[in-house]
Image 1: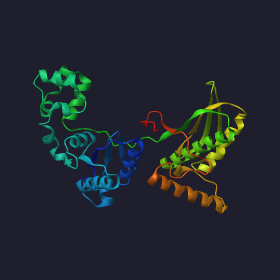
Image 2 (image 1 turned 135 degrees about the horizontal axis):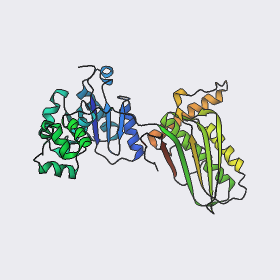
Image 3 (image 1 turned 135 degrees about the vertical axis):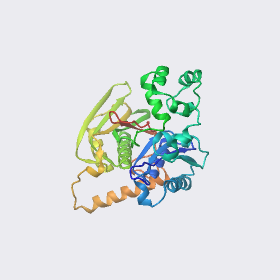
Image 4 (image 1 turned 90 degrees about the vertical axis):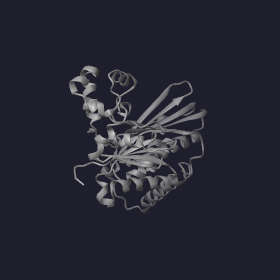
Length: 347
């Protein structure tokens, strides 16, 4: 195998997945290779090139291993395409039945593409296919053999150049992991106007705990919290606090969020909703934490890690702070970094 030859796998997931289940799939395949690109709602692409030596498996066997893990752990059937670039891998997956893998080696890419209809090529829609059909161009091999100048007269320079490259099996796009979120927002809308200070306290505490869970799941820490309180008359108040150190520790987030709530001095305010936003995010591995000689801090973090494992196994409501009682659904949203690929809102 040439060290420059890429091995890209495209997996179609034959299941209707919500965002949490799709994230579980991303986490599982990230254990095979860190080079994973999400293609929601029901596909994922992996660059297996760097993982082959680690697992000491052929590209085909590594794809089969991934598919078996999806089936064994989550009951998800999948079909796969394996090729030297993203486009060919996706097309090969489209040609695969559930449970099967179509492998298109680089040396056979042109032969495999040649008899396929032009509509199988990404970028060719109904209008373009009709234009090509009027000139007797129905197969990808015919596009590949057509002189570039002729194709440009039919489709225009930009589109003709792109389709000519794709018809020859070329696709330089890398597998790009999705961008981490730039901010996380937890939003709680109450069933009725709330005058009870204790219930307001519990609501904010629950939001802080859920933001902490999500930060740890994303392996990120936050340096700033913003609390927005919306009232029955549709007005709102907002407070922001920069944290002493970036953290994903729920008790630290709760202390800061409750401090923001106290600073608002709500008294007898009729509260309708709370929003807690964490921004200034960065990877947890890059964060510094003040060492503590207090064993209570170590025990609290160990308990938090155990609670996170229980939630991953039994659901997000399996463990909650004692002061938080079951209540309305908390909505979690992630905002992508500018220029990055956003992730859908989770409810």
